[in-house]
Each structure stands twice: as structure tokens, then as C-alpha cells.
Image (cartoon, rainbow, N blue to C red; front, side, top):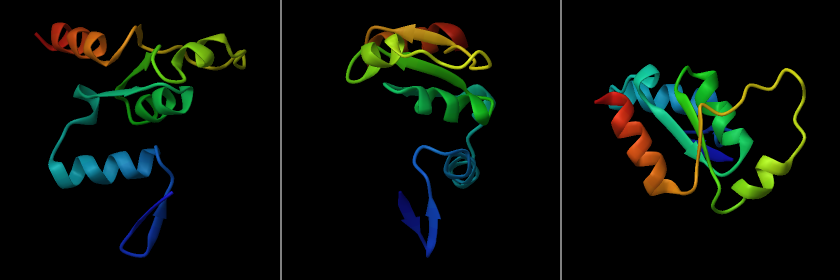
Length: 93
């Protein structure tokens, strides 16, 4: 939980990402959210960014979890952060 000027934001969460993107003038649609948990992937996808799950950290365990039938898959699963960066850079080139 992150507190910003008296307001609470769940981390990661769509509201936090939208406000950060507004402050930084970043296009979320042209962005990627990389994380080692499904909640990270889902937060990115909720704001129309790509959601990438990395196998490092909790990622391998997250891949083994049974998710509900309506759960959207990650846009990409990568071995680690450098692989996710390479995928993203190739995607925007």
C-alpha cells in the first residue's frame, strides 16, 4: 500500500499507474508492466499496457497456479527482466 498526499493506492494498481502516467506524460498503451506475480501482469493489462510475467522471483510458482477460466494470459512470459526488456524493445522497433 502506497500513501500519496493522504490517499491510499494499492500497489500495483490501475489508479497508481494511470496517475503516474499522467504525471510523466507516458502512454500506457505503449508501455509494459513487468512482474513476477499475476497481479502485476493484470495491473498492466487493466490500463491497456502489455503484461509480462518473468520466471524469476515468484514467477515460476505463479505459472504453476491454477487461474480462473476468465483469466487473461500474460502478453509474454520471459525468463528474466533482461529478456523482457529485449522483447519490449523488439516490439516497439
